[in-house]
Image (cartoon, rainbow, N blue to C red; front, side, top):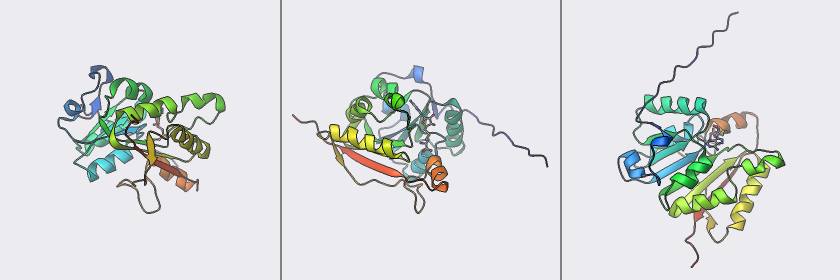
Length: 216
Ligand SMILES: C[S@@+](CC[C@H](N)C(=O)[O-])C[C@H]1O[C@@H](n2cnc3c(N)ncnc32)[C@H](O)[C@@H]1O
């Protein structure tokens, strides 16, 4: 039997793909999207399933995906472009540097961090996205009352995320996790990785926290 695997042809859509080097600092989100609207940022957006479903369900909001891997980035750009979505932008860059250097204070409505790489070896924990300094930066960039949603299949990473929040308890309060539009019955977020891990019957852990105002 001959197996013929057809390679998906991916196109660039200039209205979706953002060139990191062309961005203003701090990033002018209204200019980027061509309007003033609540902005959601997904860290490590992968193939873009969350962005696609949520942007269709919430045309009143804008969505920015940050993805490092070129292959996934290009796949997601092609997907958003094919669907003709006007409220999604994708940027190929390192999320840690992007949040720290490019996002202005109190400009983001919500951050979505779904199945970030867990870096299970202890000597690699410093590479995890959800760590003290980055979470401080998320707090800075969030509007008052804004939220961070975090989902992982990696129980130790989930526990360490809870510890990060506990260390910054004056800045965060736990809030109910809001399941995105694309989550099917029995799913928490419905991303590619959640679907892949559910097939393997892995446990999935979710955390949502809201920004408290700074203590005076
Ligand atoms: C396990 S995948 C999860 C993808 C998607 N969120 C999902 O749930 O299906 C993690 C993604 O984060 C991306 N990523 C890892 N480190 C990153 C970084 N520092 N900046 C931007 N993206 C990153 C990876 O390339 C990968 O696409």
